[in-house]
Amino acid sequence: MTIAEKVQAFLERASWIRKMFEEGTQLKARYGAENVFDFSLGNPSLEPPAHFKEVLVDMAKAPGLGHHSYMPNIGYPAVRQAVAEFVSSEQGLEITADEVIMTCGAAGALNVILKAVLDPGDEVITLAPYFVEYGFYADNHGGVLKTVSTKSDFTIDVQAIQAAITPKTKAILINSPNNPSGQIYSKESLLQLGVVLTEEGRRLNRTLYLVSDEPYRKITFDGVKVPSIFSCYAESVIVTSYSKDLSIPGERIGFLAVNPQATYKKDLLAGMALANRILGYVNAPALMQRTIQSLQGICVDPAIYEQKRNLLCDGLSECGYEFVKPKGAFYLFPKTPIPDDVTFVKALQEELILTVPGSGFGSPGYFRIAFCVDDETIRRALPGFERVLKRS
Ligand SMILES: Cc1ncc(COP(=O)(O)O)c(C=O)c1O
Image (cartoon, rainbow, N blue to C red; front, side):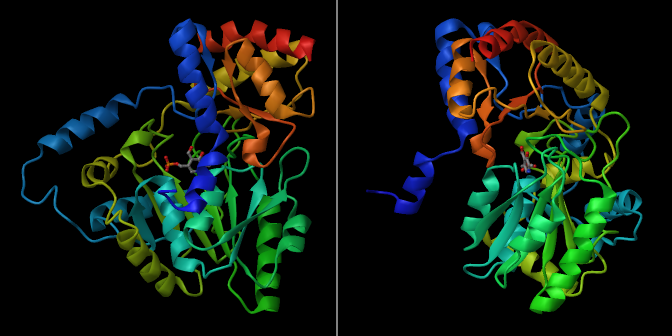
């Protein structure tokens, strides 16, 4: 054995998403990419907004020394100021640049927070279905991920969260709009969660952090808005990125923002600034920081994803699939017609349709369809979805 046993074990039960990606690559080599319907990855299908490319070119050409140098670990002050102003308007609460840290995407931000708050054996509660990397991230920093089921419509079950809190709980990690369900948690449920976390934190004499992972915040449908987490609970941190809003996940640019009312805000920010450096990120990419500074609030058109959602949902409900219609993000999480989601996903593969079993998100009996693909892929895949359902 040349690598750590733990990592070897991780590789063996490696993410379903990656597995499907690899099998998809083989199928594409065999049948031609145009004949494989790949709904396995959340890689945005839309081009970044034209304005992004213009600003990027301007920034690349901008004269001046030091544009590519090391900088404060938390990012350029002017960029954090621009982000703080935008987050203040979104959250309805005054946030300063000091409460913002620029990160290598939402994934980098999550690792920075967990590094800063977890002691060995501390528990992080998340809600199933959930983004599968959370388990690895908690483990990266000595923590343990505990999952709590959501209700049948994937909304928050506050009582179940309360029941899962123990003296080892350090953070509750939520994701809305959710990958993979597309559910958006209501303001009411978040306020209830805030009350429970305040009560439990007092009872346990421990700060329970609420980490809100929001990379899909701007991709919402039917006029639904994502509520402000900062107004629901003081000990909260927002994590987000420009990966999905601007269709630039490969550029690794995001940020975290700490609630200005958080009790130990200074310590938390100092810990996270250090974590950003010692995890090896050092700082978020310089060129990308300078680019997004003037792009606050800019997003690809969510109506395009909404139309894809409608196309897919109409087609699948006509065939007889059961699902909760997503309110945001670009995923659909239908029930599998048989209990074994892995077998069902394999049956879809025989029709050259690539999806991911719900087991990969902590929710067996479902499967995820990432509909960030072109409309033609959705249309052409529908007969295959129907045949597999009929055969099951
Ligand atoms: C829920 C969720 N959180 C975090 C991430 C990571 O995003 P980023 O590319 O900004 O690191 C993703 C990416 O798909 C995601 O779906």
